[in-house]
Length: 169
Figure 1: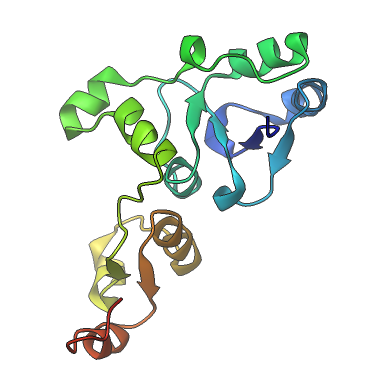
Figure 2 (figure 1 turned 180 degrees about the horizontal axis):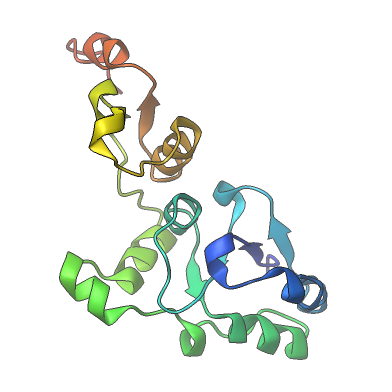
């Protein structure tokens, strides 16, 4: 059994005053904290989860999204607790967006990547100051795309080159 690797991100509700307790619980549960989203097996987060770039990247590779209570229980057991009882659900947003987090995680556990076979490029016009959009940085977009199985293209010209027949895997 592989020890769980937990992605600790700001939206997880793991505030600075809890950090030492969290580290102790991770250690006591025979787990480690992932330094990058693509290394995570579990995402420990608040309910409802906030859709931050780190969450979006980690959720594409993690097998489970669980509450902080799962971490405390894992510490008490000395191993990863059963995730089912601690699964994160967000029925209101899932219904509004036509998304099922548990089904998405099940597909990830089965080896699927939601953007496999696709390329992602952000048009430069999306970052115009007058648009007032809070977009992820290029590095965050790359992490989200790659964790989801896509190829990240830094420039639209890269997309044009890939559009030629046979250019995309």
